[in-house]
Length: 206
Image (cartoon, rainbow, N blue to C red; front, side):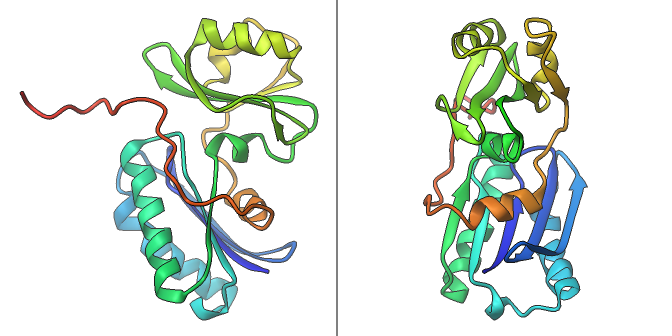
């Protein structure tokens, strides 16, 4: 199955193309803003590198959050538009699931959501043990402790939890690997629905 995977939820613009288990091309550029301007060009570049036409794709996968409101919408809108234009199915992958994927044991994926909060979700051997949630760091620790002692903490929120779990391995990586997102996309039928865990920080003027 040939899959194009996209991620603009967090602090990068990323894309990858796989054919079965083989990675054909991938790219990831750190950025907090500007995903909309970069994504289409990046996709064109990796499709050219993979030597594929868009019509050759079987499926499109995209991260659906949690993460940046603006970035999340950029990726979802692009994936849905491409899906409609090509007549190819489009599936959604959780950003926290992608961060934790392909890691054994009890893995906690956490993204620093600011205001002493984390977007957090726990997995055991890739299977979700809780819903993705926006929690105060102390509340996240309490909920994770009920599940056991984590083998690994991954994501930008890992430092906020690490003091409570000093034995756990720690990977502060800011964004998921787009190749992992592509492989997850091959195994899911989850519809593309943005995952917003709290209201946006920006407010309309009164």
